[in-house]
Length: 349
Image (cartoon, helix red, strand yellow):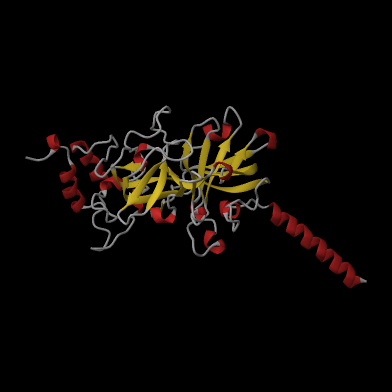
C-alpha cells in the first residue's frame, strides 16, 4: 500500500515537473530548428514564450520588425552540421502604437511572452499581437553577435523553368540560416528585375556561384525605389550583408531564398568607408578607424570581429568595405589598395 502510494506521489511529482519544464520559455533555436521539408517550425500556430535574443536589426514597416539573434542557444546540439545556425528570428509588432518596437534598441536582449508562431511565405515569424496579451522584457548592453560568413553557393539562386515560368530552389539546405545576419564576399551584380515583385537582383562570386538579393527592407533606400542607389549592373562589392529569408508561394510558382539588405553599409563598395557610394580621400578616416594590422597569416583568409563591432559613433555596421584586398583584415596592404580605387581628382600626384 505504501509502495503504491509512493509511486503515485512520485508520478504526480513527475507530472508537475514535466508541466513546469514544458512551460519554460523556448529558445530561438528550439523554435527555428526543423526537419520539415517545407522549413516550417514544429511550433507553427502555437502561442509560446521565447527566451529571446539580441536585437541585431529593426525596420519600420506596416508591422514593424525586430530581428533577434541568440548566440548562446544550442544550435549545435540540434544540428551539429550547422553549429552557428538556427539562432535568428523575426518578430512582427502588431500592437499600435508599437510598444515593443519603439522601446527596444539595437544591442538589447529581448525576451517575449505570449507570442504567436506563424509560418508566412516560408519564414518563421513571432507575432506580437494584442489579442494574445503579449509582453516583453529587455536587458540593454549586449554586444551585437558577429554575422555568419557564407557563400552564394549556400543559398543558390532558384532555377527557372521557362515553359511553366516558375522559379524554384533545388532544396531547402539554406533553412538553418533563415533570419540570421549573414555576409557574402567579393561579388558582382548580374541580372536584375527578378522575383515576385521584380525587385530581386543576382550577385555572383568569383567561383560563378549566384544568389538572389533584395533591398526592400533597406532603411537607406527611398520607399518608391526597387533598389538601393548603389545597386547597378556590373557593380562590384567587397561584401554584402543582411538578413537571409525565404519567399515561398508554391501556387504562384515561387520558392527561393534571398539576402535582404538592411542599410547602405550592408552594400560594401570596396574603399567606400563613409558609405556615400564613391571612393575618395574622405574614406581614409574610416580606414584608420578600421585598421587592425595584419591578423590573417599570409595567404589565408579570416574574419575579425571588428567588422561587426566598429566604434559606436560610426554608423556603418562593419569595416568590410575597407578590406580592399579581401583577406580578412584591414592593414597597410589595404591602404595601398585604396589609393588605386580613389577617384582621379583624389589620387596622389
